[in-house]
Structure formats: C-alpha cells, structure tokens
Image 1 (spheres, rainbow, N blue to C red):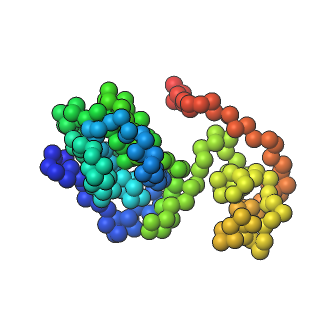
Image 2 (cartoon, rainbow, N blue to C red):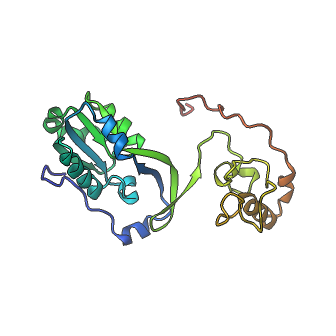
Image 3 (cartoon, one colour):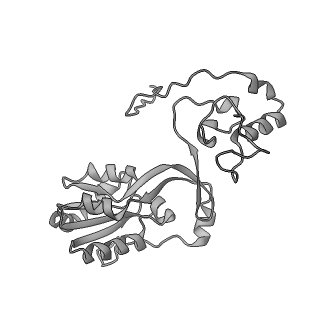
Length: 238
C-alpha cells in the first residue's frame, strides 16, 4: 500500500467476482447525502476510508465510490486530508495499515468510513478521531449472481434448519414464519412478492424429497428473540 494520490487496490474484475460467487459478504447501501451532510456538519477536514472486499463488490465503498465522495465533499467546501482503501477494513491488520496514514488522519477532524459496520467499529478502536459511517449495513448475504446478494441468515441464535430441510424460514419468509405456509401463498409464490418463491413451499418440497414431511407437523413454539443477549459474546470451551 503506497501513499500515492489514489491509495487504492485494484477493483475485482468480472472474472474475479465470478470466482467469488457464494462467498459471504456484509451487504451495505449508501446513506443519503442529507444524512451524511448532517453527520459532517461540524467537521471541515475529513479523511476517507474505503474497503477492498465487501463494499468494493457491492460498489458502495471501493475506489470509485471513495473518489466520488472526495469530489462531492470538496464541492461542499470540505477539506480532504487524505484517503485509503484498506484491503480488509474489519481485520486486525487495520491498525497497522492506518498507522501509515497517521499524519494525514491527524490533520483531519473526523474520518468518513465507507465500509460496513464491522469496519467502522474496527477503525473506531484504532483512532481517537470521530468516525462517521457513510453506509448502512443491511445484512449478511451470499452472492448468488453478478451484482446480486441474498440474505441467508439473520443470526437469530435459535436455529431450526434441522427441521426445515436446511432452508431458513426466519430469513427466507417475508413474514419470518416458523410455522407455515400462511394462507396467502399462491402457486408456490409469496403473496407479498409474486416474483419470490414461497419459503415454506420450498421447505415442503425439500422435506418431501428427503422423506421427512413429518417434520412439517411439528409445531414451533413462540420464538425467543433474546436467546442471545446483546451484544453477543461467545467463549470457545476450554
């Protein structure tokens, strides 16, 4: 990583994205300009941070997006003290990478972070400056096609995949029903989104093919949405 004007890594090509289909990503979307302007209202000198993994593939925080943000903020009279695209903003190497840009960050009044929430929190632990997220983190998703990401797990802490053929109704059903299907399913499609397969129809067909339809008759009680107190914590058994 060099301190040239771009401070970037190469954006993945289509071939790279094709090879990485199926990988798990943090899915993000940009905050509105109005919200970012409010968050930066009292900050005039800004250092920008992007990421070379998830947000680069989502096109929300890679080199083009960081460059566009620099230009937009400059038009609004903000001074950009520098920028960097970290290879992986949420890993332990972030501290080492950011030290290289210490002088530029020291000149800034705040850091605008174009990464997922994991990257924002990682950066916040390494610097004393205010950190401002430029993106909203939506969900943990799997890339199912070029530019298409599908949520696969809400990390609820109460997994029932063993009873539903490996298809998660909490995530895949628009209503999050753990006893389904509802009365609105129509020809295997969801009543909320007619282009979407009904999760419980998929579960039925999967269990039928596995000879386990009896699991459909097992009633799931009320879910405990606080099965894992916040913030989550786990210790590996010794």
